[in-house]
Length: 206
Image (tube, rainbow, N blue to C red):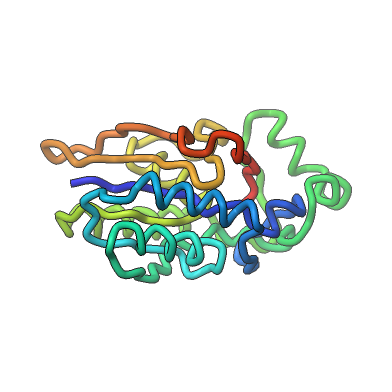
């Protein structure tokens, strides 16, 4: 029983350097290449289901993977990226200019508050729900999501304090794998990018 977490390929928002949150962007040409490489890497894996965030950048990635493993794509609202509020659509420079308290919190090693955000407790509750459903399913599946979601799934599965950011970095189209062993979630690999030689991107914003 395995859960393979895949971040979407590079999106137009990633390439523009903006924070995306719930904003909907498609894949860039490079993002499509990354998704194709990931699909090739996973081809032939015994995968029963492919779940995806309903946002376009994730769905487009999931469709390529699903075709390679012979599974249907299933939208999973719980995999949608964190709603980061009023900073959605802004670059890091614009955020620093309008909300200097945000980069200051990061410099202190703290997770900042964002005006209009979803709320971390709400976010982590829906992430925990996704994990619980996977545990109960008994199936091996791929879940295509976002950098913040993959990171949150890792924090939740491993029981880590999510108030301290930056433990998990998640490249576009990287693979993170969990297995369920004797009732415990075990992290088998994180941010596996071996299939992305020459096409790796590490934008961490959505």
